Each structure stands twice: as structure tokens, then as C-alpha cells.
Image (cartoon, rainbow, N blue to C red; front, side, top):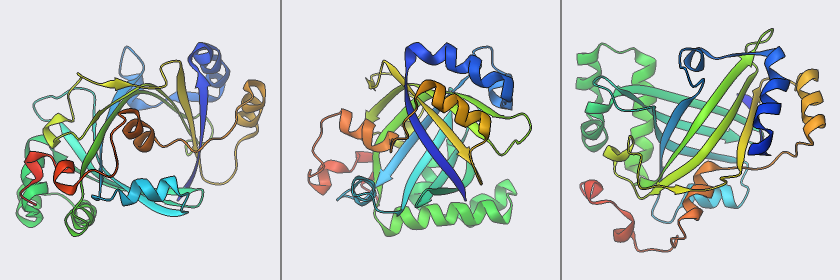
Length: 254
């Protein structure tokens, strides 16, 4: 499991910060291939009716998880999405993810018939197990979509240590109580932190000296920044809604 640190940075410092890190990093392959040098991340977060995962984060519980479906950029004919479980144990994070076709997503989540799907797509055993774990949590916990979180990610890896990952996450926005078919929507959304972006650092052992120098120069303060909880809160909806009010119509079949 990797370590993850997050920092909130004024958007006015974006160009200066980028110039400070570029001598030590390269853009990742996804950014390198795009003229904008960033890509759009789209995540639908699931939770229980009483919002157990939200409350675990709010309470600062050290061992917790987030269940989400992640997609990227815009919908295309063969777009893939990823069934993900992000786990956090103290300062360390781990993630499992299983790619599926967006066109198959509704049926997979509704029916949970993974055997037939994975045989038809000739997918590997690890992907199957990761997908099965995702569906186990969704169905056993009666989880439903709570918020769709979107942002543009500018991502880098270290030139000399590629396990060092840095990202600038910009233009944070969200949709509350989405359906699965909303993962590629663009409007209407609620924007937050419009004058800031998040600087995320992922590493395995210790923070490199050059990163420490950058953090000191910019006066970074590590923060507990959860895009899920911040975006959900931005909609000013009660977490004490009745269960029926929480479940989108497309999920009443659970």
C-alpha cells in the first residue's frame, strides 16, 4: 500500500508550482497524449442509506473504504469504466479495480452475473475477483450512488523513481444522487473550491528531498481532503433523508 498526502493550493500558483516540479517529473502517458496535458476523472461514489463510509471519513476512522465506479474523459463507442474499491489504513492507501464496458455496466451491477460476462470477454482471474469484491460490497451493503465527482487531472511520475506520483486536480464539480448512466454527463453540476486545486503526492517509503523543498517553498500544509465528502456536502442535502429518497429510480431493483 502506498502513502498519500494531499494539499490545497491557490489556483493562482498553478503555473509556478508546475514549473517547480517539471525538472523532476514527466507527464504520465495519458496526459502526454492529450493537447491539454490533462484528462477528466469521473467517479460515482456509493454508500449505504445511513452513509456509513461518509461517516467513517468524518469521524477520522483509520481503517475505511470507498466504493466507486470511475470513468475518464467523454463517452465513446467502447468506453470502459472501472469498478473500484479504495482502501485506507492509517496513512496508507490501496486500490483494486476491474474494467468493464460502459455499455455493460447497468446489467453487471443490476444482475451481478459476472461468470457469463467475463467468459464472453475473456478477462483474467484477478479482474474477475476485483469485480466480484466490488459487487459483494454493493449488494451486501445495499449501496447506492450518492454523488458523481468530476475534475481535470494533470498527472506526473518521477523521472528517477516512477513510483512517485504527483497530480494537480482542478475544476472540482459534482452531481448529487446520480444514476449509473450519468457518469459521462457534464451539466448541470455544482462547482466547489473554484479558486483552488488539490496537489496529491503518492509514494511508498519517504518523501523525496526535492518534493520537501517544493513544499517548504510554497508553504504546503497537509490536509485531509476527501472529494467524496466535500462534493456531497456542497449540495446542502440532508444525510438523514429516508432510504426511499436516497435510492435513484434505476436502483429500486436491488
